[in-house]
Length: 511
Ligand SMILES: Cc1cc2nc3c(=O)[nH]c(=O)nc-3n(C[C@H](O)[C@H](O)[C@H](O)COP(=O)(O)OP(=O)(O)OC[C@H]3O[C@@H](n4cnc5c(N)ncnc54)[C@H](O)[C@@H]3O)c2cc1C
Image 1 (tube, helix red, strand yellow):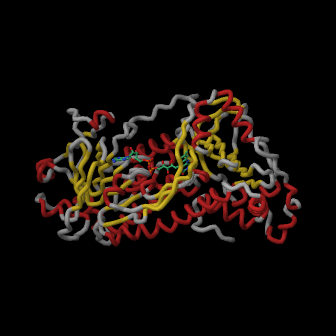
Image 2 (cartoon, protein in one colour; image 1 turned 30 degrees about the vertical axis):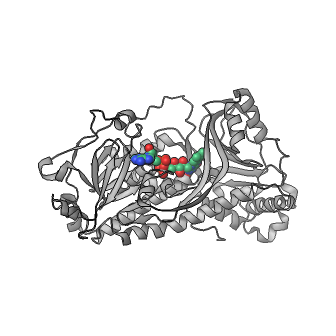
Image 3 (tube, helix red, strand yellow; image 1 turned 120 degrees about the vertical axis):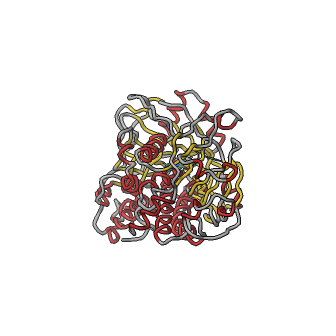
């Protein structure tokens, strides 16, 4: 890296030092309370611009897991760690200390993070914080369907890895990313409110990151976005990142169209307890949708059970005893028999395609551990597929669920969002290295190009699986059984599936 540029950036890019972070509750942030969301800065007489409107290099709208991943990643790189970043979100969890008591059952809102995500978290220094809290690595997985015609087992050793993934509570991921930036001198300011509206100032010049801080008159703000916040304050930003989830206000304000559909399915989630520790991830495709049991450490597991909205409302309102009974029914003999290995001749019919048999190819079907008790409340989430037709325009870019939402059947949603966040921070850094304005459309389009293909491919795969398993039709059931057997016995296919699901390969192909 060019030392001169780094020094110059350190001096000039964002000389604003946060003296006081302003946190307040949601209600306070929304109301006209006396608590101001406006940050205080050192050298205010030099840095506060006309009308007292503060200015930042990047405004991240939405401090959820993906917004925080972007902030952490920016904080970890030499060329971006000096940027002046505003995080706008009224969620009171932002910045509050994680309070998990030993023995508390895990929160039902969890994410399965892939090995690729774990490795990115390690790179930016966030994984060490995850490891200080409850998390559960898993190295085995079994997938089967209700017809009893086939099953597939996966083992991390099939691809010479130690783990297939890790199940972590969302609040742990979120707070780990936050701790990661707290430990640096990253110049972030948290605005505990929501974005209300946004106007883009016409571009005056494009002179790189420093231009935003060169003057204090209105002309220096050409090309900046002016953000109106829910507490009545305003903020100028050189780049606005919409990390504000599926109902993104940024996406709406910038006018990006979306493509997608509702699945007419809800996911019921909760934490359950077994008699013994569960170390495997289980997924069974039922006529109404998949049910997944994800290990959470100790005797706990997380349930993600997809069904139609009427069934979901029954499932969330029935007694605990009835629910546990329904769960065990769905995971065991309910809807159909246990699959046997011999459906296609113990896989011998596929022997010409087997290559070097994987470790898991010899494993028999197992019944998941019995659920003995409910360990949390039950929540239901409507499911949909949504993709923004554009991710970037001048000075505005979308990441995470603001750009795409997927069916949770393979636990990929936030992993895609993390991929966006890390890709965007890398591209911003590359832009700064060559003196490109961070709001420049050509730079942001590079990010769009890189992420769109990866996201669309994963969305197509997940939607295809969702559709293939939503139909109960004899010949299709046999085809699905053949797919299970193929994935179970054909080593190159199995390895490709594991690599793709691990986030390490762009497309499933035979390797
Ligand atoms: C049942 C279920 C199970 C799932 N399981 C997995 C899994 O195992 N693995 C996986 O990878 N993914 C999973 N997902 C997907 C994952 O939860 C999402 O992809 C992820 O939460 C998206 O994160 P985000 O930060 O992009 O958006 P969000 O989590 O929606 O965060 C958006 C943030 O923006 C803020 N915000 C909104 N509007 C504004 C505004 N106007 N101004 C300022 N701030 C605003 C909100 O307060 C929020 O903090 C699952 C999803 C569901 C529904």
